[in-house]
Image (cartoon, rainbow, N blue to C red):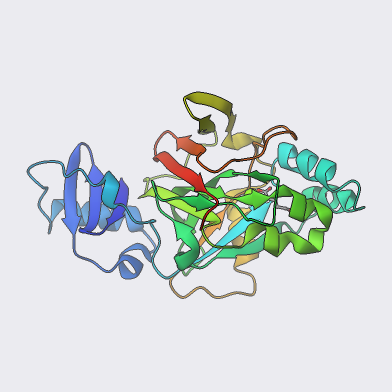
Length: 280
Ligand code: DO4
Ligand code: MG
């Protein structure tokens, strides 16, 4: 089942049917069995819309008042890219250590007002010359610490800033429109399969200038492991979103330009599309 947050309300999509819900987003999603609750809503209370409403232009990011956190260096590819970019600064060892350590890298990414929805622009910093998107499966974890849903995330990153000094990580990661989430919150009956593939295309003008894909099974850590570290000493009364790290990094000579279109797909969730805008 897919939950779309729109300016007209929340649309629940299931088996080619659409149901308009009038619930408050935070209350609706913060449950111990969200899938079962949505199923009950469908069978009992709400009626499907007669016609499917086209709402792509009206989509909001599928988040309410939750915080967005991110995990890093969870795939070998991310470890290698980070080691390369930080070798001159002497920071490379830290990435190797965190890849192998028990404790994962977790960092605060954004509050909802800095997050772009599907089709909204993402931003690159004006004081950076090396920027990439990071396509990441993103978990919705309820207030009890249990994973209830998934969305697609783009963890925009300034590689020159984080490479210059690992202590600059918050500036490389947190700025206006440095994250995108969408297009929906996917709520399956069972946890998402590790065989699920995440893919990215970056389009400049008419040309695909970068594309790649990776299976979630290539991730070093379990999603439940990341969630339990995040909830160790933090309470999230309305739940929390957690990006799970990137397994795809463009080659070192690649940087995003204003106007580039970033498309990230995960089959059961959809495609998150954002155009880069450096003129924020
Ligand atoms: O350590 C830097 C950030 C890592 C990250 O965002 C990722 O691996 O996805
Ligand atoms: Mg990342």
